[in-house]
Image: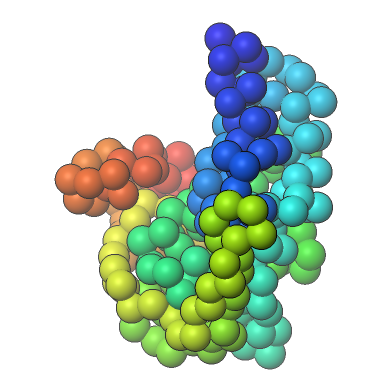
Length: 224
């Protein structure tokens, strides 16, 4: 069922994006499909599926590739801008959670995506955490084409305060890897993990779809 029903739908989206311009869909759309492809590859012991997901994350054209999901870096501050930061913070945190799950799956297979491109993901997680803790972060205007055909150019000129400060169960996995496994400085990720702890499950974060985006087992799994 996974190979013949789910995987074809995942790869069709990643290949065609419903015939929209490649930049139409936000990072979350790609990332949930990539998480599925990677998980299916691992479960079925299919190295080609796993490698395909890793290749897309490093070099894919869609917004789910790591460099497109994290388009701007502020190395002096140890921060990097998440692609959906100008959209709203709920989607930004969901994307962080999805990429965290992907990186953990890959890590357990011996592939380090957490540290890819000089810890690019850590800097983005710190950025999202810092802003949602109430502190200032830099923002570079972000533009993309959306819609069918060549799409229409749309630009975000400022970071969005929508859903700012919302709690999501996405931080324990990142605190565990970067701060505990690797011993790196993660002041904002750690502060968010402490604020959310203990992470709950579906429905604990609101009645709408966003409250069910993560399983919420982070504290149970990563506080050992």
